[in-house]
Figure 1 (tube, rainbow, N blue to C red):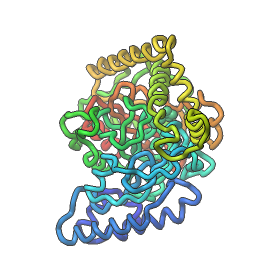
Figure 2 (figure 1 turned 180 degrees about the vertical axis):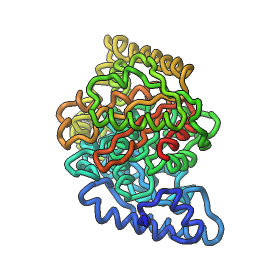
Figure 3 (figure 1 turned 135 degrees about the horizontal axis):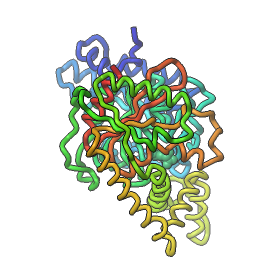
Figure 4 (figure 1 turned 90 degrees about the vertical axis):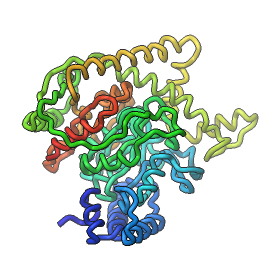
Length: 472
Ligand code: GLN
């Protein structure tokens, strides 16, 4: 028998609807799990205990009166600390936002609340979502639930651990170059980055606005689908959201579907043996479920990482210029005024954030912008076209999510290039704007491995359909 906090959203919902459990009990079970484990794991920056219990009670009353809101009514979820929830602090894992309290709700979180979800707290993350290990958080690292000497991945490491360690039933993360999929892979949970434009970015602290996307962490593909259904949709407050047809889950068979295996990924060097073994096992399952696996050519795999590490810092340097000690959080007064900006930023930002601001400012500066930013934008078009071409031949694409399993804390911290290489298989998806999900491979109790399935623009239904077959 599963404990309440171990249930999937779907299971919990069925029991709630039958009146066999209450949201209060479910929420208490999650809060107890947080109390017993979070001292060691540090998945949360803040737990909203009282608000969560109050929301749970309200949900129970609604259900008793037959006024249940959305599919997530009464379900305890966690949110990454870079999406605003009105009246609550929001820090993006940074010291520079210490003391900042959100003045309004992010659209994605508001939609969760309108659907009746219980928000348990805000989860730890690499500062401003920059990193692959959660070690760049100003509030200390999050630890891997299976081995606290290891990292959970990042930047949404807190959300991944909260789900993997059954501290909540699902969570939101953000993904600019892999920050949902990579920690999902390392922690053995489902992590979905929707198509760019599927989910509103309003109220999400911008890292690289043209690449950022909010998405779910969950224990199953069906749970991920339920969260996506709730948070998706066009938003007048985010002009990059799309009017594409709404996502509806469709659990079609894989029979006759073609899955492309890019030789650039599968034959790349540096893939850990355990990752190759486990992902190949997963491919065999897809084949047994009726999919046709074909090797494909997906050029610009290496260039994608370079393009990402130009475009992203350029946008970071512009987006983070608003943190100047004047409008938000930390202020270090200096004279003349310029020194207030300089000192607040020097004191408030961590090394990795500073590195990216410097790189981006350099790549955008007069004399270099054509060689770096403009050129990277052109290669972005080529990458997008490579995906368009591939999707003329195949329905889905599969790669390992990451080249390695969870690494040791500190192992890559002082080697930015090694840390950036964690993202080789995830960044091109953001550069192209397509959706992708990391699915846990068969669990043998060792370090988890994820298989990344990549779908066509706005075809999350096919993507999650394939994901579900892999699970069964
Ligand atoms: N690990 C990548 C980076 O450091 C991705 C970050 C993200 O998706 N937010 O930039």
